[in-house]
Image (tube, rainbow, N blue to C red):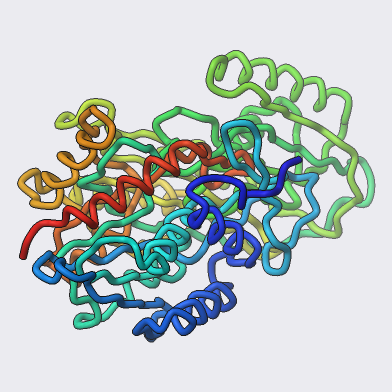
Length: 483
């Protein structure tokens, strides 16, 4: 396993990425990465500050002869998604990511890599450290807690940024320029219950586990039609022929990750019969997801007898609510071929002995459709007895095809690589929409290297694409529009 990222090119980007990967930085635990970037600014004698929202800001003046160019803000986020394989022992709050070279890619050993958005952050540091780079006034903006709510972008105050252009370095397909993104809405639901004592006789405890799914980013991979472990588990329970008692459920993880695994603790009377039914169900969903998922597993295993179970009525309403909720792609865009317009992801279902909670992330590039989807999902859940809260709404970023920086970047890319870059929008919720609301005059583009399977332990970044992305970034700075 080749862990020497410093041998890769461009050397400065991989140097800083290697250092960033060694710093634990899951969402809400970004203290050490903030301190690292602030120390970087101090070492290089750059103007810097830490704002109230936890964002780090650095400024560097124009190089000689570039004072008349529009100022550019380079933006990336500090945090990463902490996902690992079930058999991987790893503490995201304390352990460094085990990044290594795997052929044409850099990936991690059993965990997310954090190239989302560590490569973007590393590239900003490489630019700021490079006194040979040609640029107008540049600002580095490292935003806090993007992955779990875009807290830093929401907390950004007017007056901090001085630039005319914002380059968001958080996209994941090299050769594409993103000029728009979806807005988002969080749905949180809870159903309280009075736990009942587990029967003393007549039942055996088991775990039912749905796993082996690919998961991925709910804004980027949602269009792949991948399986959702929460829905697959409750689909089986809702149709189960044998009576069961539900003691606990733990499905999915982060709000913006498609669930890869879900585990239920159950009491059943006939374990072999239940296991045989689960095995038949596994064959059914393997067939349904042929060509999309290649490692689906539905497993039944013996478990310790729990002290309590949910009331049967609660378990029934929960199962019906989960399978009744819309999930996945709701509508494709009619304006841009292949773009998901509206979707929802049932990210989390978990019980704690007195309540069961759900979390969904709704996305749409059409605000009215996002609102209507939230109302529809709330109606389903409220009929099942859940209390529902809709929060964290933010609008999308509407494309400006007359953008001066878009025209400049198209010319730059073609001059460098001999082909036109693709100009598109993304279904994921980029921070551009929020930052643009606070700074409405900003001319914005999002781009980046090729990163596959973000938000999952299969995450990897293409090495050659990092080189192209960074060369393009430097050329964009050099050819920034005149003020």
